[in-house]
Amino acid sequence: MKYSLIILLLACSTIVSAQTTVEDQIKIAILAAPEEYREGAKVYGVDEEGDPIVLREGSNEFVCVADNPGTRFQVSCYHNSLEPFMNRGRELRKEGKNPQEIFDIREEEAKSGTLQMPEKPAALHVYYGDEVSYNSETNIMEGAKYRYVVYIPFATEATTGIPARPNAPGHPWLMNPGTHRAHIMITPGDSN
Image 1: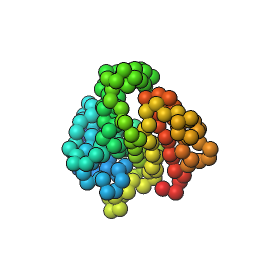
Image 2: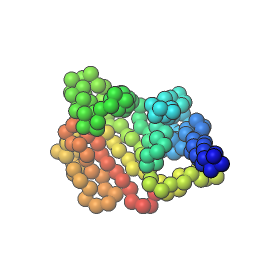
Image 3: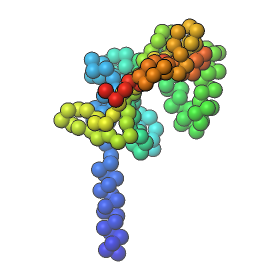
Image 4: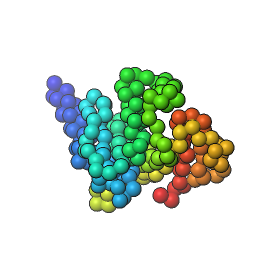
């Protein structure tokens, strides 16, 4: 009985220490945004069931997404013209759709005009890492890196002059060319 109580107390303390406050979720989520847009960005987080919730309304054109605990660290921030696309993905994931089903459904909806896609290139900033730790003094997630994605729906190699694979590390390349999810990938080297 004594050992069971100790194990229970240790488990509870681990769970409590793993929980992140709303303020911390916001502070860490906006690290993905360009510095001058962090203060006014809308921020999504996740509730106890793992469903997306709005943690903070925004006053500019950026939307940030807090880290989903239990997975590899990743926060992101994107231009609000991507919100219909991103929101549809959240809805479909909540319905239990797998990544290919989500891709196919959004592709069909974008082609039919029922899913609004950005009319101009729109950026997604991703701050991610496998082994990271938050330094509250510097407001930096140590061990994290940046990756940039620029969505250009239905763009191709021919319309952009960008290859479908990087020429070298850190070079831009076009992922999913010719589809609703066509986007330029830019993954800088270890210098960030």
